[in-house]
Amino acid sequence: MVEFKRIAVIGFGVMGSSISQVFAQAGFEVYAVDISEEILRRGLENIWSGSFGLKKAVERGRITEEQAREALARIKTTVVLAEAVREADLVVEAAFEDLEVKRRLFKEVDSLAPLHAIIASNTSTLSITALAAVTRRPEKVVGMHFFNPPQVLKLVEVVRGMLTSDETVSAVKSLAERLGKVPIVCRDSPGFIANRIGILPILEALRLLDQGVASANDIDTAMKLGYNWPMGPLELADFIGLDVLLGIAEVLYRETGSPAYHPPPVLRRLVAAGYLGRKTGRGIYTYK
Ligand SMILES: NC(=O)c1ccc[n+]([C@@H]2O[C@H](COP(=O)([O-])OP(=O)(O)OC[C@H]3O[C@@H](n4cnc5c(N)ncnc54)[C@H](O)[C@@H]3O)[C@@H](O)[C@H]2O)c1
Image 1 (tube, rainbow, N blue to C red):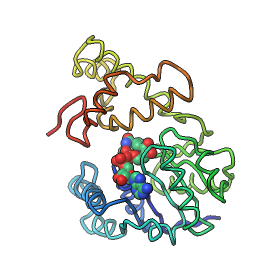
Image 2 (cartoon, rainbow, N blue to C red):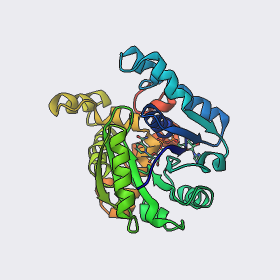
Image 3 (cartoon, rainbow, N blue to C red):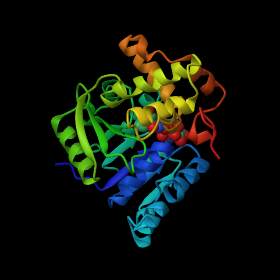
């Protein structure tokens, strides 16, 4: 049976930093890697003082100050991939949603991480089988898809690639449970379950905005008050990140051939302008 103690996280952006926090709060040693010291600094800031960070958890009475400090102390960071993965039992990749970037990383990680290590991807849409194919351990490659914000949302999609072993799937399922999450298992398929369904209303809301049918606020209000959604689809788009959303839509459109996933022009325009949502202070809405 696989025993997880040390977790390497690749990519310390929105998801990688928050996933590191989730593991650290559950008592795991985390070694995170990204490409610059500045990104690592911002990631640690997100873990400490972000909206779902450790400081907020203390303020909300969920954990003690001491627990917060201990969790933070369990997270180490580096810009050297080999250092992060050398002693890992599990590697969670949360780099850019780009198949070539991820395939390059998987190949490198495969040559650097211990042979017993499971390599998981947090990809939203890309093929786990295609990532497994560049490694010498395809049976130990799996999808471990957290949802944003992972500190709050309970779902983890455990994605079984064509060659993923039953042992790997069950090890990652029990690990997700140890994190206080609810794992579901699905086959390798574009967008898996939640994004395949969940992205459609967001794209439709963007089309309504593009066609001038209503303001962003009114579109969001319609779904919040009419369907009791906790967040409007356009607020959600800004929260996910418009670049991430565009990436998801492009893969789903290409892989399924369904026009429902065709990215609306307004989404491309916003991304081209660098308005990526909350993380850049401006997206469909403007943030302070
Ligand atoms: N944003 C979401 O709501 C969300 C939800 C679930 C899953 N995901 C998935 O998680 C992954 C990361 O998304 P994100 O929103 O955190 O993106 P992000 O842009 O905030 O972070 C990605 C990070 O990866 C780093 N990176 C890129 N190449 C690297 C390399 N070779 N080595 C080390 N670091 C590298 C980047 O510097 C960046 O900091 C994507 O696959 C995305 O589809 C995102």
